[in-house]
Length: 198
Image 1 (cartoon, one colour):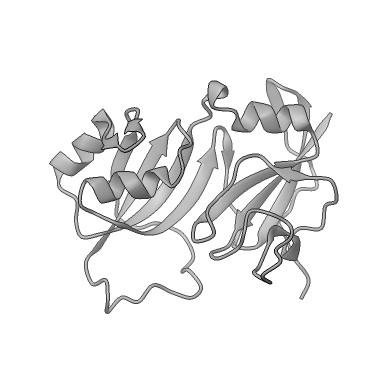
Image 2 (cartoon, helix red, strand yellow; image 1 turned 90 degrees about the vertical axis):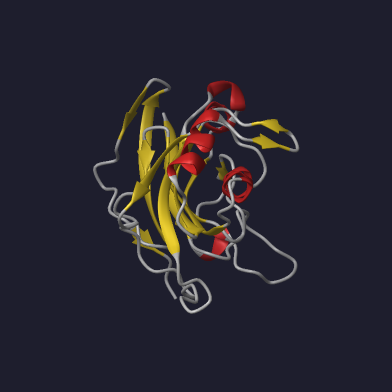
């Protein structure tokens, strides 16, 4: 039996528990000794982060061999046309090789809370929300992909890793699940979202 934590990592929080420079870390939001993140999110990215005290589970979630699909809500500069979206679906050439085909669609709204601090709408008057699903985990991959097709990423929020979803968690909140077997996950009956105490 393994314990898994689903955390909504806020903007400008490190995907680690300590920092010598005094920046916000996971330890400001989750007090669970002995857990480690399965993968990471960049400092300026937001959304779902999975953590566990089970090394084998972390490996199953994060190792590229298992190809857990990751879904993001991505706010990009401008309005991507069909050709740009089709390029993302085919795979785009980056410095470390061509990406695998992605699933992508336009969204009318992100259905996410506003970022804190919010994006400056005066500097970015024309933006589009996309939903993008990839099965790779290259460094800053989504940002590089959208930049390649001419639409830099302004905000990046991971909403799903495999079957685990961000649903119901506000920034800084988390919930705990108990997994009884690698192939089956069972939600803890007492898994209401929790937030750090201030």
